[in-house]
Structures are given as C-alpha cells and as structure tokens.
Image (cartoon, rainbow, N blue to C red; front, side):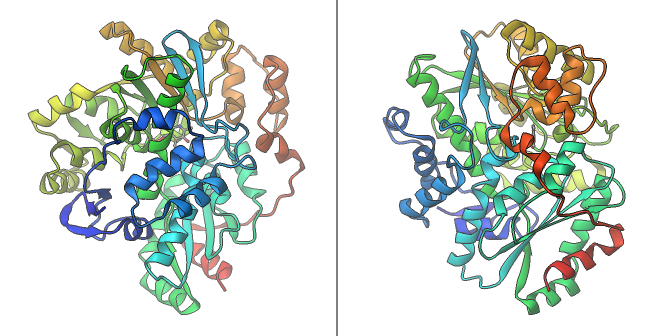
Length: 494
Ligand SMILES: *Cc1c(COP(=O)(O)O)cnc(C)c1O
C-alpha cells in the first residue's frame, strides 16, 4: 500500500518510509492512499481471536511489507502480560444496557498512549531496517506528562534506539514527574527544562532544525526522530482497539453483529478519534463519532460550525492531556473529506498565517453527518466524576469524565439511544488530587500518599506501576536552561 502526504498526493512512500520519516517533507502527514475494507466475515473471525491476533490482522491490512510473523512478534512484545495487567489488554466495561466504557489504561504507564507507544518502537526499528538506515535513531520528546512516560516505557532497551525526554520543570504533575525520573533502561534520558511546556517544546523543535547538531550526530552514528502522534505508526495501533471493542461486545452478547454503535472520545490532538473514524471506514458499524473537549473547545466549535480558530484563551484544566489549541491529526480528517491535497494545503497555510480557516459548505455537511462535538469545563468534570461513581460505583479520571458529560449532552439533544462506547483514556489514580476532590475529600494527602488515600476512600487498588513508584530510585534530576538543551543531547550521545 502506498502512503501519501495530505498536502501533496504526488509525494508517496512505502509504509516503512512513512513510519521512519514521521512527517512528510512538505509538512503534511503521511496517510494511507486508501482505507482497506475488512473482508467479508472478518468481524466474525476476529471475534474468536485474542487482542494480539486482532492487532496482527488489522495492521497487516495496512502494512504489506511486514510479514504476519513479524507483526505477531511485535504484538506479543507490545501487549504481553508483562506489559498489560489484563489479558484482554483493552477491555470493555459495561455500566448499563447501552452504556459501555473502553478501558485503554491497563498498560505500563496507565494512560492510553501505551496502546500505540508500546507498538511504535517495534514498527519503527523494523522500518529502519527495511529502509536500510544504519544509524541509531535518537527520539527526542517534549512532554507535558503522558506522552513522555509512554514513550520512555515503549523505547526502553529497544535495540538501536536512544530516547531523551524534556519536560517543563514547573509544568507536570508530581506523579508524572516521578514516573519519568525513575525510568529504567540503558538507552533513556530525562531532563527538565526551566520554564513551561512551550519552552520545552520550542527547544525540541529547535534541536530538530539545528543542522550543525544533525551533522555532528550523523558523524557519531545517530539521527533524530520523533515519537509524536502525527507518525502513522501511532495512529495505526489505535484502530485495532476499536475493532477489538466491537468484537468483544458482539462476543459477549452486548450488541448484535452489524448493529451500529456510537463512540465518544475525549480529544486533544485528534489522533484517538481519528482512529475510530478509520475503524468505521474499514467496515466496523460506527454511527456517530462524538468529540469531547474540555474548556479548550476549539474542536467543538470547528466540528459544529466549520470554523477553526486558534486565536483564543488557553486554559490549564484538570484534563491536561487535552489542553491543546492545534490538533495536528485533524489534517488527516480534512484530507479524508474530499481527498483534495490542494484544499488541505490551503487550510494549513491559513492556519499558520492567521490561526484560522473555514471549510466549505460541502465539507461542513460531511462533518456534521458523522460527528457531534461538545465540551465540559472543570466544575462539570468534577461533578461527573462524583455522579458516575455514585450511580455505577465506577471511578473515572478527569479526561474520561469530560466524555461522559458530552455523551449526556448528545443524548439530550438528539434522543439517539444507540449503544454508546465511551473511551476511557487514563487511570483515575494518575489524577488522584482532582478525583479525591470530586469524591468530596477536602484534605488531600501529599506526595504518593494520595494513592493510599484514593484506595481508602474507594477500596480500589492503585495500578502496580504507580504503586511501585514508592520503591524506585530517582535516576534523573538534571535541569537545563532552554538554550542548553543541545548540550544534554550531545552529552547523552557521546
Ligand atoms: C493524549 C490523551 C488524550 C487526547 O488524545 P488525542 O489522541 O491527542 O486526541 C486524552 N486523554 C488522555 C489521558 C491522554 O493522555
């Protein structure tokens, strides 16, 4: 299968080149030339498979250059019992008839990023071999929390890779910082940057465009790459869990084969919900896709009105992984509407020049037929965590709570009672403070004692990777000025 750039259809490459490259040279996103349709009876067949087997089956349709054996090896390593705390990997938890939750946080860092970042290193290293790249890849990441730890765990001790994560000194939650600073593995590095997330992100972007650094690293046998969600190698593994969830629901008698389901996704960079869209294109019976945002509601406005406008106030919310004003993966959806690369190029140019664009009337209709969008502020997020806990005895994190609230809005506005799959993107134990507050606790314990407090209040056990932080030694405690990040890179890759 060919992959093409969303900004220029003439710019094509193989799957392995698309994954090795990350971003197209013209700034577009490498995207499959077409979305393969599931063969007849494939869903029935998939119902009888394990998560790993389903992953091989789905990914193989997009990656002809990779053998089934190769993919099976990756899936065994990525989704094995040493990585995920349930053999189902991504289980569907049913709250009531017609209301289901897809839990994507059973992996090593307790957030949904693991679903793709456990697979990406295998896809990337194999792609480098296929493209005959002989240098060692060095992944640079700027993170506001979940991606950094997810990437560290994914790339830890993967041959021919190094990974270096930069996080803002004052911009991550205490548990997230500890997760990163105690990271194990011989090929990893972590460093904080004085300043906020923007400083860290701008610094990393500068490293990528530093020609002198590139030349020096090439001489030492390294080249730079990124693990960010625009890489096709991160979107593809996410399609798998939508197909898998549908099969689980059929297998367990929760829906009839062929019955459409609605899917609600707490959204930031638009990667997760885009994967749900692709699953629908492949033939999974998907009704409406419901995009849930927090107070940074640029997508709510876009999907309802066709106007994308990033010129607005940025809010720091209690669902920080959705605090984002430029949703990179939306570009792939814009391409899917008309498969018109010129149109996409125009929108992206307007976005970079004025921060705003408006799609055509035809595109608006296309979007509203498939998507519903809503948003939820922090006060409602906390209210919903409390309500869901009381009603179903089920504890959700703030990101997932945003989705629950938008499902209520959708059902109230449309009366659509089709089965709903809500995507749960993080363990509530990653955000103990706000979750405890939502449960009515007024005094919150310090440090890692919040984990015990949440256990006392709910009777639930903290996931092992978070509970285990107590016994882990700090390995990284260095901070740099943003202008000295290059020294960290050169120091690590000597
Ligand atoms: C990254 C993340 C999101 C947003 O996902 P996108 O693919 O960027 O839309 C939502 N919730 C959590 C917990 C995340 O870590």
